[in-house]
Every structure is written in structure tokens, then in C-alpha cells.
Image (tube, rainbow over all chains, first blue to last red; front, side, top):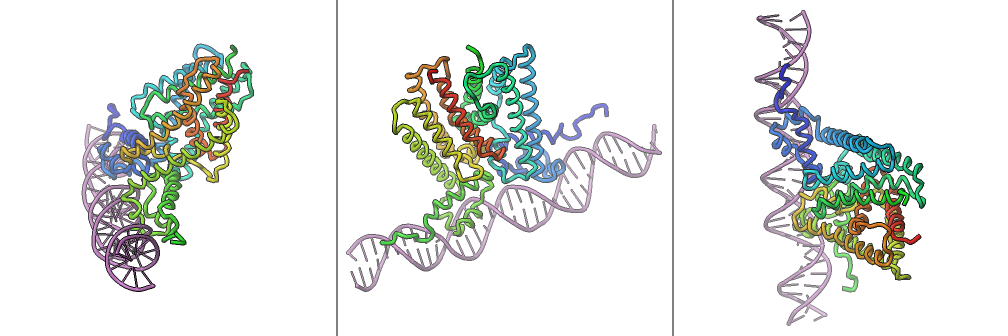
Length: 208
Length: 208
DNA sequence: TGTACATCAGTGAACGCGCGTTCACTGATGTAC
DNA sequence: TGTACATCAGTGAACGCGCGTTCACTGATGTAC
């Protein structure tokens, strides 16, 4: 037990999920074959079915992994942003700046979002997976709406504004920015969209 | 020749493309089988291959059809918006309002964008199709950027602003709104996002 | 106006390949006594 | 400390089905003369 080592591969299951995510973001779930995943992971087909009951179980595991990762990233950014101040507007502006930097420095050439990929193929998945997917975006809504409401209390905006839509715009803007970035193969689009969203938030709430 | 009628079905090719678009938006291109399309269209497999050399040719035809439709809708909305005035800001605000209404009243339960669907599966397509897809979003950029520049000349914004990002935000916001609408099965999200974008444009440029 | 030919919009049968899934088995590690 | 058994992380072979594609053919319409 001393070694706790790598029985076979070091966490094969995680490796499969990683490979699957990259493949799905490149060509979709249906076109991602188990065959190619096991070839890349260096196991046999039966090895795959030891980890996942069927292909549907792979989809669900991918979604759970994605949601967990998503939550972790957001948590970290917001807690870093709130570290040294307790002004909700300032905190959000810092968070958005951090977010733009994080997403601008991703190693992948054409990053994508699994939620978006799955939602454009959702007939392939069972209700379970679809519900999980909806949850991931609901968390964004809640998180940003809470923030914006706190900000609006302290800095009443000059004009009336649909706060829920403005909260959804955070996620919407990221999804849209990812798509434009992919279509035009321009990784600068997403960070610029986020910084633009940030500028708009500031323009709405910040007293002159 | 009098009848010019319906040789077999009335424009089978168009019917296939229509069916294919709906299927692709629901489950992706790879999972959309020729078999299901011909079953729905009421022809045989060979009939399909009379219209399309192979599945790749179907993809390209879908993209061309989508681009043409996209252009027509935008042309129409902008020309309606510009009909009775020549103020660029007012024109854009009217256009965005029309756009929100148009997209809010779509008959489909969960509308989607073929460009977005394809970009999340772009490994399935050849360079030809990918280039077409990029063009569709470039047209949005050009169109909105032109507008925004004209607006900025007449109404210099209070703060400096990244006009190109603001132009891209039009497309980005629609793509994002579609995704959120699908994920949450809420058709009101997209029109609200567009109206929010409109409010932001007004807040940036309109003199108090 | 009638005939010969061309084209358009398909039909029908067959193909091979790759996919997801199943099942009986295995060899290394961990645990009970 | 040694042995018996259980579990973990797989292997290997076989399966049937559906998919995209091909090929020879067809029957209705259009066109030339």
C-alpha cells in the first residue's frame, strides 16, 4: 500500500474523460468513438466498459466533471477578487478582469464549453444529463444576479435595467465569445468580450 | 410545361435541407443519418444521393442555405429599420427591437444556430465548409461595425469603447442567448438579451 | 404532329466497415483469519 | 508469517446492426427535327 501506485495507468478513468472532452469539443459526442478513446488512452475496449457502463455513462461523467471544474474556477476567481476589499462593484470588476486573463491564457488553440456542445446535441442524452447541464448555467445566473443586486443596492443605476438579463449576459457573453473565437480562429475575441462586459457593468453602475 | 409541377415531390432537395437542419440542431451532424432524412422526406437512399454527392455535400449545402437565410433576415430588418429616418443610432435601436421581436416569435421550441452547431463539430467538415461558416459571422461583424462607427461619429461616446468588440457582441449575444435559451428551455432569454444589448448601446451613445 | 433522343428525379439491391455492447476470463493487489 | 479469498482494473474474442456509398437501372418529362 506504501506506493498507492498506479495499478495500471495512473487514473485511467480521468484520462479517458480528459481525452473525451477534447474529442467532443472538436467533433461532437456522436462522432467521438469509444474506439479512438481507448486507442489514445492505451487500454482495450473492455477496459473502457469497466469504467463506464455504456456511452451514456461517459456523457454523464463528462458533465459532472465539467460542472465541478466550472464551479472550482469561478469560486477561485471570485474569492481572489474579494480578498482585499468588500465593495461588491469593485469585486466584480476585479473578478471579470481575472476571468478575462484566465480565459485569454488557456493553452488550447480553440477552447470550448461542454455545456454548449451538449446543448446543440441534447437529443443524444437522457434527462439526467440534460438536467445537469441546465444546472451549470443556473449557477452562473444565481452567482452573478446576487452580485448585481448587491451592487445595485449600493450604486443605484442611472437607468432602469433588467438585472436578471444582465446576470445571464455573463454566461451568454462567454458562450458567444467562445463561438466567435472558434469560428474566426481568434483567441483574443473571448477576453475582449469579457472586458467589454466589464466596461459596460462599470458604465452602468459606477458614479462618474 | 403549363403546370411546371412537382415532378416528384415539390422541391425534394429543399425539403431534405429543411429536415436536415432541424435534425442537426437537435442532435448534431454525425448523429443525423441519411436514413432518417429520406424516411422523413419520403424518398429512397439513392434519391438522396442524386441530390448530394455525399454527406459532405449535404453539409455544404446546409451552410449555404443557412448563410443566405441569415443575410436575408438581417437585410430585411435593417432596411425596415432605416425606412423612415436617417439617424444611424435610431436606426440601430429600431433594428434591434425588430430583431428581438422576430426571434421572440419563432415557432420552434428551441431555436438554434447552425453556425454554432457546426463550429462545435468542425472536425467533421472540410475546409470549404469551415470557411463558409467563418464568413457568416464576419458579415455580422462588418455590418454592426459600420453602424457603430457611423453612430460614434455623430454621437461621441462618453467613455472610450472597443467598437469592434461591441460589434462582435451583437453576434456573440445572439449565440449566447440561444444557448442559454436551450439549456434552460426558456424562449424569453434570447429576446431579453437582445433588448439588453440595445439598452447598453443606447446608454453608451445617447446623449442624456 | 410524330418520333428519337436526352435529361431529370429518382428506384432497388448489395457492399463492407466501424460502431457500441456482451461475456467469460485473468493477473496483480488487498484483506481476514 | 502463511494461506484463502475478494476485489480491482483490466484482456480478448465475438456479436449484430446501422451507416455511408456504389451501381445498374427506370419511368416521366422536355427538346430537336
